[in-house]
Length: 131
Image (cartoon, rainbow, N blue to C red; front, top):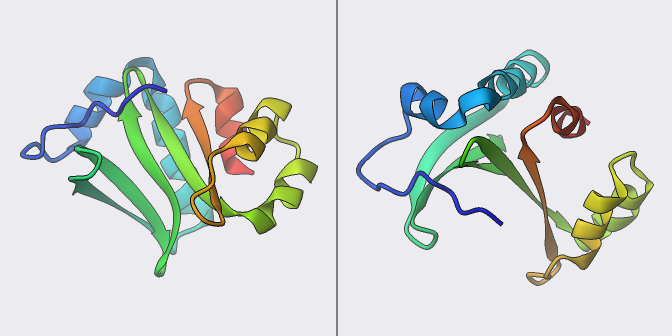
């Protein structure tokens, strides 16, 4: 897994910085946030620096519930979702790839929570995120 690259605590991730790091995936970034703003206007996003991971992460929330975390990695970005064990059946019945289903089923458990990550480099991954 690639590590986040926004690691300078003193450098807030401005749009200019983000776009310079995304490269060819900038249109995917714009598509994600256009979709969110259009279809889920009550969702908000906030950049925060986290000392435990020594990087900036975007926390995407609806009211007080975290929907996903987003990190910039070299040439793309990654979303990280945390689901409880109750979600396993729904994820396994979904139309996402068997690779993603396996990723979730094999993920290390943090109590009753497991991780599902999507690296957004292609339009195919964008379609999965929109589901």
